[in-house]
Length: 211
Image 1 (tube, rainbow, N blue to C red):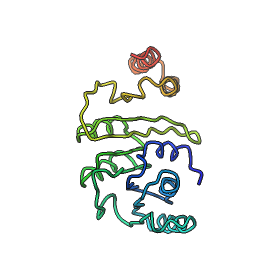
Image 2: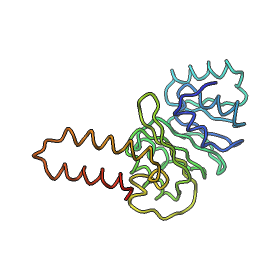
Image 3: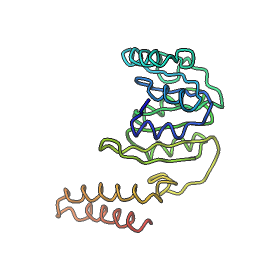
């Protein structure tokens, strides 16, 4: 079983031997990998019937029906969550993720990869009583991803921690990526818009200086 770079990064944050609830499992490739390589038992859930049909075929292929349970459901509905479980949500937007998390009992460990609004994701989940244990930044097929592992407990964070991440803020490759993105935007801003250009120039300077 070979995973994409993104799913491989998600897999590295999953605890060995625990039950994994994979919300939005798609074709269950992550679940198969974790079962074969990480001694996990998985619940592969998705709201899409077609995705679960393909997931079932993949699970059958590896003879893992006794270890991977398939659920057709919206988010965590109908799933019994224990404190020791790892809840994995990958490939959704932040608002959808937060709707799922705020309406169900949660475990002590959340592994989240959102498509957008990462700052909001950090703020809201920290406000729910979690701290940021790990962060990974990767580029897979030209698209950037951030995967965050939240653990139950408290921690104090500064504004920069929510914006850049308490761990990723010191990641040189991540800052280089952000600088390039900011510079691309700056080039597209008309010179007459002085104050907007100044804002981006300040952002770029702070990223370069790590301040």
